[in-house]
Amino acid sequence: MNKTMRYRLDGTFKIVQFTDLHWKNGDQRDRRTQALMERIIMQEKPDLIVFTGDVIESLRCKDPIQSFRNAIAVAEGSGIPWVSIFGNHDCEQEVTKEQLMKVQLEYVGSLAEAGPPEVDGVGNFIVRVSDSHGEVAAALYFLDSGDYSALPSVRGYDWIRNSQVNWFRSQSRELQQQHGGVPVPSLAFFHIPLPEYRQVWNYNTCYGHRYEKVHAPMLNSGLFAAMVESGGVMGTFCGHDHTNDYIGELNGIRLCYGRCTGYNTYGRLLYPKGARVIQLKLREGFTTWLRLANGRIAMNPRRHFPNWFSRV
Image 1: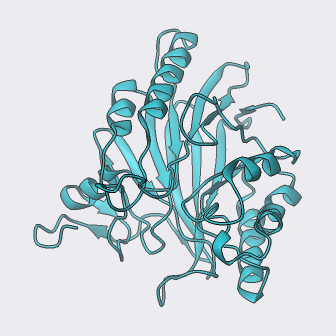
Image 2: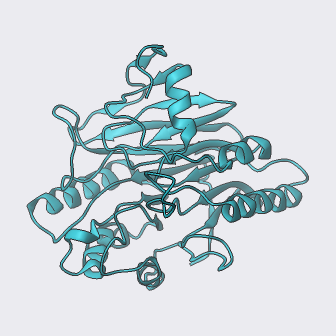
């Protein structure tokens, strides 16, 4: 499939972000996840579906490859283009990222790419969105945020590697040159939140909920700085923390959590599953809201002000 998409005639482009399905073996909770995705796709009618990692929980899958096929079947069956990036649970056991990427590439609707072999991770690629004249008017970056730290001296989760940051810089420069020297409006998607997600919550005004600490990597490899310097990135979108859904702006970029979609994983009482919806508007940035399982649309959840005594 062509990796360039197009704005609608009204100048909009809509994305539905599903995250943290944690699909296992097709049990009743997986079927609830499937039904929720079908309902949201029908309600929102997006132009692109994005899975931001932990599509499956491979440690608990009898056949991880089949579980992955089952999990993305709703997107493929909808006829709407889709992409999936990897989280920390997709390939913990019995399956590799290379194998799951090969599965994605079999599908007509998938826009995913394995990415350059010299760049760390699997699934670093760009989807371009053109205007009515065929000119690139927006870019969507997808990055593999890894899984767990391989360094004994660093605990916790993996981080975006230097080769990926350099890849982002080069791609951004190339797009800018093709765009008459003007940065191309862009969004970035990955699974594990950047350390700046913690910073924006602790120091800036945010909208939404933070019911668990930000499980960002302990090392900061500079992707956010590269995005600020590029001048084109308007927003970033992640998953990973199932009971966080807030948005905060830092240095001109909106840092956004998705809304956990999967029923086969942890959540919170009175915190319904759902998805984040992102609508690009040609030459006007983007708006975003949550589509929840209870039928509600949440445009701007409660406002949070920094609390100097509760930073984590």
